[in-house]
Image 1 (cartoon, rainbow, N blue to C red):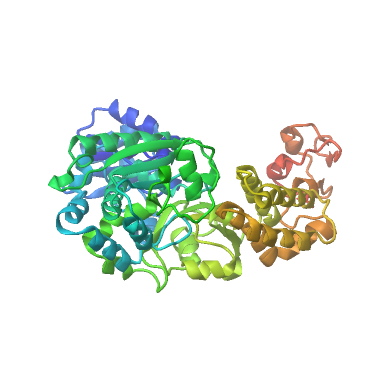
Image 2 (tube, rainbow, N blue to C red):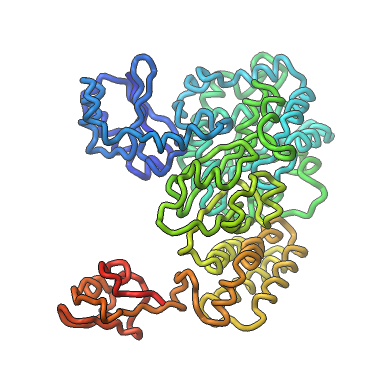
Length: 580
């Protein structure tokens, strides 16, 4: 038997390492190993047990206190010992309803052993490309597949590869953008932590296609586990001759370098990333020239993100037609999403393009984890936009999402219910982009700051007539004048929330009310005397002693002392406290 413990960042944060140590202390007749994140982040820690016939028993939300019960199950076949930990059929649907290509090995193989990858068919696509195909044939297969950049822009991968291939010069660079900066997004991190050799193989195929001898992974320094496992994978691949000189006996040679970035969101823009790679402050360059002609060290360079490269080996092995058979006319293949927020099943979801938002949020994600109705979903992170509930059947592809005012982005999907203030949500994302602006161009540096100031005023009840129109005017000016994608897309959360939730802006400005009851400056807690039983629970939970009253007598909130933390509202068992 084999015991496999999920040890992605989400699993470790939930206590997977404690579980591993507790199991190691038991006398268990089974091999114990690790894997990465399978995507069911809401059920971590996860322990998979395979019997001698490779039948799987998946245990979820495991703690170190369950180690003895697991030992009973493994050693004695006592199924009752772990019955409460076995994943339900309903939760199992989270995976069975997905189509996994980029994530095909995640949570299944051991990311720290190259043998686990090769036993799963790893590096066969690289061997096929180097020994049986010309670089032009590789590019043609990628063209047939319709693979577009998964970093957000959706630009055809083959076109970028071909442009770099045709650029003059012997020294070229292939760069992987693993600087995943969107709040709530963790697709790239999971791929690197769980299947680093898949990234390496995809990059080596790309390097062969464009004629690059140097491959660089630019990964954010906040991903220490991803960096650790990628370094280990590079060392293993180098030791086996998969990285280095004359790979698989061919004329192709390539080395690998890792650069840990400083976490600047603007470095998601390819020229800003190149500036950072060269040791400069991450600020975008004017284009043209494009990186394909003049990139890293002014040499021809190609940049794609982690998920893009994670699809390449599968495409070479299975053919471009197989990938193109999935998806829609203008958006081929599958897409990975990091589903977070007010949804029951949060985690990584990979589905064919052409599915709807409803399919992801309700069918796979299980719907709202509260009893409150679905309100909106933020697509594309700070660069994207809010899509309202009445557009829940929007098809997931680049064109359809763009028509809503949002974007596909790298795959962040933040689900919101009716308790979310949309003005506050726009302020949250604009606060992020304003701080992350590199400051090179005035429209982004000053424009986002002015917009943020207006949103802060509005959420404090200090909005003025004409603010909405002025916000819209600023949005379009910034989009038209900003130098790079950060500034050009920063207004999207504001524009979409105004478009679909204008009434909330008007309520904040005209009535000084927050319909969602989320903006603390615009809410007030009151105790309804007729309902108050005088249990004193609210007073005991108030951190600033703003509630007074005798036992079994109605209590009163001193609004001058109240800090609007909501502790009283949450603790009242009789519905006596209201939020206005």
